[in-house]
Amino acid sequence: MTNFGAAQRGLFMAVTVLYWTSMYIYVPTLSPYLKDGGYSLQFIGIVLGSYGFVQMFVRFPLGILSDRMGRRKPFILLGMFTAIASCLLFLIPGSWIWPLAGRIVAGVCASTWVAFTVMYAGFFGNGGMGRAMGNISLMTVSGQMLGMLLSGWLNDGFSPAAPFMLGAIVAAIGLALAMLLRESDPGGDGQPGMSFALIASVVKNATLLRVSLLSVLAHGVLFITMFGFTPLKAQEFGANGLQLTLVVFSFMLPHAIASFGSAAWLVPRFGYWRTIGTGFIVSGICTACMVMSPSIEWLYVTQALNGLAQGLHMPLLLGLAIRDVDRSGRATAMGLYQALYAVGMFSGPFLAGWLNENWGLNSGFLFGAFLAAIASLLVWRWAYADRSRGVDSQARNRSM
Image (tube, rainbow, N blue to C red; front, side, top):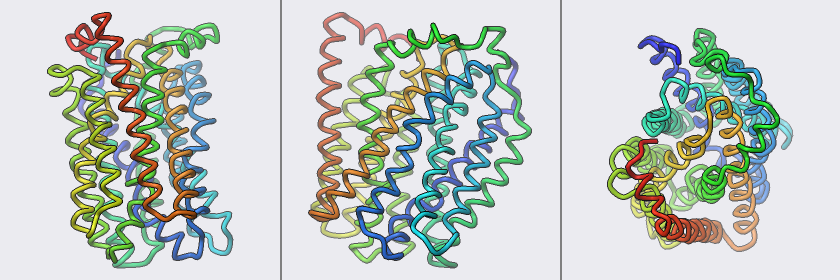
């Protein structure tokens, strides 16, 4: 592991925050933007789902390629370039193809997150994996929150196109800074690139497969709610730009706090499965309660608790995905993990969009609560099996 000085640490953090800011600066206003453009809820679901659909097919081969090259920086540069292109595509008028193309390119951009996470993990040993994933989850949520908080203000104060314009500018700054990054683990510490023989061993990793399935369900809930149709629920209450910003803030701030603290504070006391399971249970309850929200104020409350709950399990699942994988195969494992959870990013809003079109907006949120309930049952089953073998008590005492 190379010496990663304070300057490079700060640079990586800045690039990561700008990366997520550029991708999420238009997310709160995207579904209202498309609806105001005359598109149906079913088409909006397709556009939202296309983001995850692309990642299902791009992330895993990108991870394999990164491991075989032993490089992460080229893919980070690709991510910043496609972030620029995505925002600009939304600004082209005249056809349904452009918003769909913009979201598809955003999916390619998000696929490069594989390289970000593995590059940052390379700055820490295996014993610091929990800390690494907690830190990078905080960077992720900070960038997403910054972008989403700016979205409503830009939309109200300037124009519906303003979030896309600023997103392209932010991504361009991130691209310039990313060119100054150094590889955290050049050449994999002298290890050979990932061989095809080792790929099979990675994809059979039991922990990786478990957390991938849970992450499919978690991202289905997330992209049905805050990153999907929650802004339309707020719009039903007549929310303006400021109120939409408050909805975002009420979700993202608790999400950021929980993402940073779950591995450090909760896992040592309660173990992985209890912490993850609690997150899913509370998230499911809050998603179902959105259906019964009588006002925008109640929506703030449901989003605050939902953000806290989803922040409990997201970073833990991310860290567990590569905890038991050798460094030479981490991008492959992360690529598989992120490709699989992209199934939830696609299918969640796609199916919710169909339900919403036929039975109203609340039907999609009930579907999201159902996904969280399935995840809770799986966590309970696996936790019971691990306790029978004494696995969870061992894992609790072992740092990620």
